[in-house]
Amino acid sequence: MAAINELNNTHSGFPLEPDREPSAGLSSVLRALDLLELVAEASGEIGVTELAARSGMHKSSVSRVMATLASRGYARQNPTTGRYALGLHLAKLGTASLAQVDLRQQARPFVEQLCRASGETVHLAEMIDDSIVYIDKAESEHVLTMRSRVGSSVPLHCTGLGKALCAFLPQDFVLRCLDRTGMVRYRPNTITDRDEFLVCLAEIRERGYAIDDEEHEEGVRCVAVPVMDYLGRAVAAISVSGPTVRLSCGRLDEMVPLVTSVGRAISAAMGLRG
Image (tube, rainbow, N blue to C red):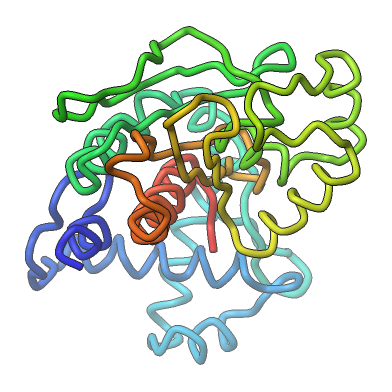
């Protein structure tokens, strides 16, 4: 439980600072941001009176803040109705922000944190050319460790990372990938039937995580979850892996909330809201 609390009480991998009373300047910034979020949540244009009611701010204050935002292009005012919508300058900033997002860089603090909390090896992976490719790894300090290395690839159909990603990708795309790669049986537990695999993916979507119980490598278990981008698309996956002598099925279940928490945190760092 302490490990879960550590993950839930951090942002970008670092402890949050204690709450402080915001300065006057900071309060103004926070009010402006609150109003922008309210404008974004509106189904269409929204007026000053409604913004004041929703924000709890005085109408005169809302009017001043919105006029300032409009002057800088962060909001735009309908000259006929006086109502507000988001400004196009936000789109410019959003595009620039997305261009600067680097998955591995954003995820690295969380990868290290999950490794410490779980005591096992953590992998971050993307799908490249019909395979899962490790793009980052934090190694367990135990004597028995994983043979994987950053840059190496593993199959889609029999790894936790692959199944976690496939479950949240379009089904026809996944099937085309499997047609190209085949479904090789690596272990007795490996799923090699397409229909059975699709049922497995549906179960993963329902519960939110994937399990690899010696499906690819003998003596290795893992639990994995997808990482989403700002549009809610599955772009990567993260997992906790270890030898079966340490990762019993019961202990694997204990890893689920840890991995899920980190997957959500990385997705939030990639811009996913909600």
